[in-house]
Length: 80
Image (cartoon, rainbow, N blue to C red; front, side):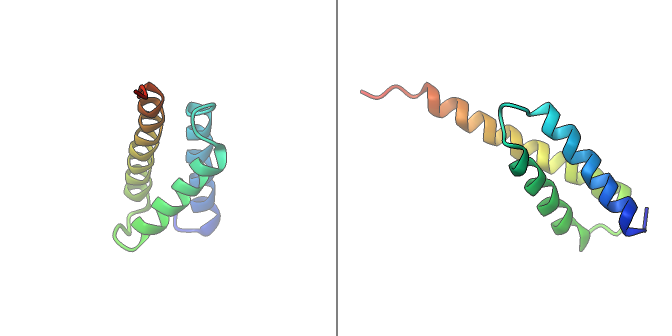
C-alpha cells in the first residue's frame, strides 16, 4: 500500500465507515478531519501502513467516543 492512491483510498474507506457509524452524533466533516489528522500524525512514527491505519482507526474511534460522551453528559447537567 505504498502508492499514494492506495493510501488515500484506505483513508477514505476508514472515514466512510466511521461517518456511517457515527451518523447523527458527529458531523461527517469532523470525522474526516479526525482521520486525516490522526493519519498525518502517525505517518512519522509508523512506517508500516497497515499498522498505521489500524492505530489511526483506534485513535479516531477513541476521539469520537469522547466527543459523543461529552455531548451526552453536557445535556444531562441540570442547572440549579
